Image (cartoon, rainbow, N blue to C red):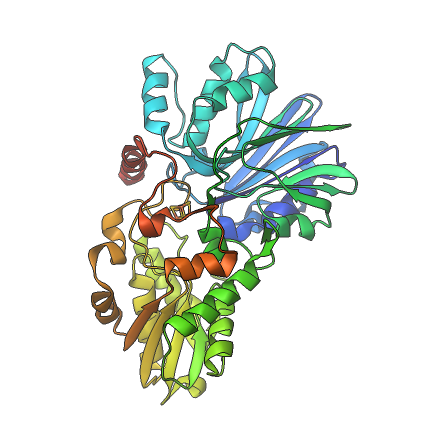
Length: 461
Ligand code: SF4
């Protein structure tokens, strides 16, 4: 996952972009970067860590220019290193161009192999760099035509912003796996991964790009057209379950309300005998509220969350994640001791984090712990932009539900059904649900090899 933001024609383009990517920080915490166009030149600043660590007033002051794109990164293809930090920038026969990407290409290995055979020299191991090579090699004369020509050769999930002399091209893939929004900030064109990031910079006229839609924003105009048509939308429902901000809205549906309905259905599907409902903060909060309201069991903030530690699921290594749990969550003993607890979280991926959290409740004196999860068991890997690369590491791929319950040291375990999850959003047929049912909407091709390639690169010194 990643967060992307762009703005065109604004005299404080870098400052607004910083605010935008700061509002998308939950989508990636490994690196942050901004590219700005000034006097036909593109200046880029990237660094490892949070946006607030990478940028300060001095740095933003040096990024002069009125067109900018920005990125916060969580690596799904390519290792967590500075040379993979975005925006990536290159010089082509069509001029200079910088790009930011949210998503994951499923035919990256095939493209990489072809490019290397043809003599291309690749800097990093991210799939985004491949798009720039395809663009540079395109016979099309204009940047805009070359971008679309390059995208004809890729498959998978992508929301992209290209910055070049004159404007920003925003593109959403034909299935619309990942979200992308347009709005007007102080009268200027802007783009962001989530509506909440545009709200944060006081954008007006916020609208979602449709799957397969291209918007080309220049200083004085904006042009929108469908680049690809006729494909069924497959929006990642995990954006509703976990990833996105609760105040974001997709297709008119607020994320917080959908999460609450997931909790309500969870309570009907998996009731429990308990005295309190406790969420795993922050992503389990709304589902726990829904569970509490339907079950009648009081909701309590049983964990104090440190706001100085990032989201544990999106920290790259397992040891960092486990240590991160104890740094992040502190149980409130006086609420927990001697009580039967319903513990609500959005998902279980590897199981290590949840095992730690159940252990924290037991140490705080919980009499029993009933784990309730507001999505089905995650049995399959995602190849469209979420970091679940190896199915053997998914606890639900290796174990039955009773075995997972025992592994977690929980007294009971209940997952929301697939239909319950879909109905909690709007009951529609516009979602990708592959990590629960294995029905991959875009053929995976060599995506598995690509992920193995990325993992191997990370292991190399
Ligand atoms: Fe989202 Fe899962 Fe589909 Fe990946 S496989 S896009 S996480 S629903």
